[in-house]
Length: 257
Image 1 (tube, rainbow, N blue to C red):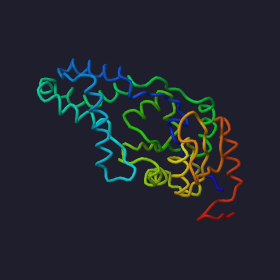
Image 2: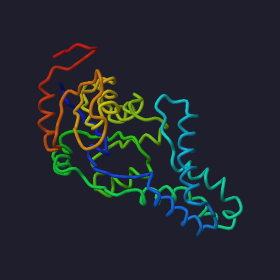
Image 3: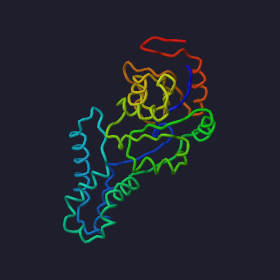
Image 4: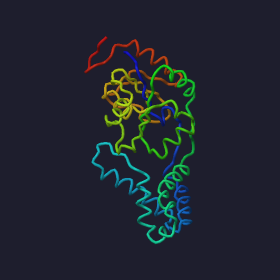
């Protein structure tokens, strides 16, 4: 295989993150914050409505693999419950309040954000050798600041986040955005991820070789799906890439030298 580029998933592959969106303290914090804006919305009602609106977004989406827009969810909640209070706020504050709520939601629900061992040194080693992109399911309002917080943003171009497109992996269009920006064909790109369906299955359907990182997150197995290489420690990735470089390319179910 002529390896010309690498695409990475983020959370669960590079970033070890732990969040709990069901934690009642998250909604107590948001409810208290809203009260300072003049919006009275009990925590239990806010929690119920948040999940209902997320479900409605997915249900109403025409996409096979729909992605929600969490800022739009909070914008809708504010419209429904802040009709009287919000006009009294400065216009600039009203405009940014949905994003502030989304950021506060993530801050309150996040309990861990750190790199897996070996990620920083491996990416430093690979960065000068291959163009690298990131394709991740998630919210841009969360993913990009978190990527900056762990000091990985500089490694990737482009950074493709599902919320910006309205659909999630394994939708082939999400991988294609990255491939187009890199100007590389899929058969010359390795995808590195931790989810057997959204990462391995999706990337292989696009024609990419795959490295599965068996981390503490993601779908660990799926019937009929086999990665091209499995690593159990991120430091093993360069070995995996060297192995795939020597492997004949898979094309339309067969191989070619």
